[in-house]
Length: 243
Ligand SMILES: Cc1cc2nc3c(=O)[nH]c(=O)nc-3n(C[C@H](O)[C@H](O)[C@H](O)COP(=O)(O)O)c2cc1C
Image (cartoon, rainbow, N blue to C red; front, side, top):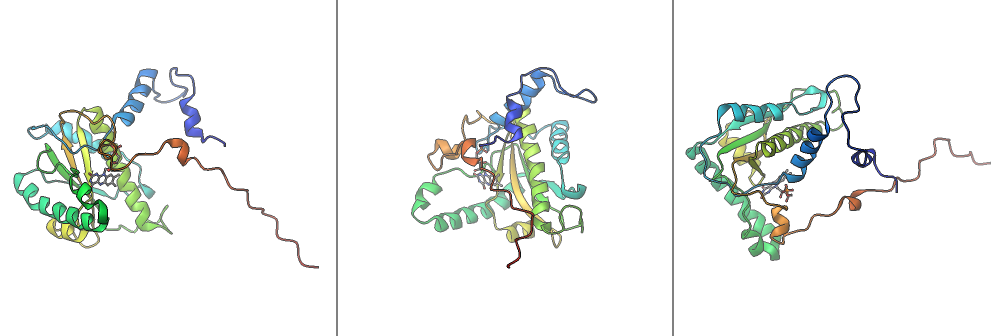
């Protein structure tokens, strides 16, 4: 099976950057990027901590804001909700969704309810990431406007996740909430949608594998399972006309 280009790139000899113009990465920098990607985890256990220093939070949000976005739409918005009052207000929304999830899971409900699914009460910072009301961007999203806006905002979250890991901070993406209830709690304007609650801060230790694996909930699959053979190339010539 042909191997996609991006996996071939990992097999290139590690040397100084190949680009002749503009900034490039040396071997140590390249290794650091791959290391942050490999060691990033979705974290739900946090160490007691004061709020993050403003300059550190600013760096992390700047990393999120550097994400790619469809048509340069930049649809992400961030809210800092770290006060004890906000945490107390939001935790019941997550708990309600957790209970609904358990019901939806059926026979695995008890097992599910034993999993820790958020660190809202104990993380140093609690952020909401919100999709802004549609600004009418057409470039790149003519046929899939919602999906491409959501994908762009997800890119911002991933940037934040990796930057946090590089700063030795954990982050957990909490998506267990009723979006209408959270939108109402956050007084979002019409058309804005909450994408996630992000728990951010120092952790006692990073999980060495996804927590869903170590708890036996589910095992991740290797890259090889995700590589698909390309289908036969459709013919461009018109079918022969019937005689
Ligand atoms: C869009 C999205 C939503 C998620 N929502 C939750 C959540 O509500 N609660 C939770 O415990 N984990 C949540 N996760 C974390 C995943 O369970 C986690 O990424 C996955 O198990 C792989 O683990 P890893 O991120 O440590 O590699 C979410 C992840 C993503 C990308």
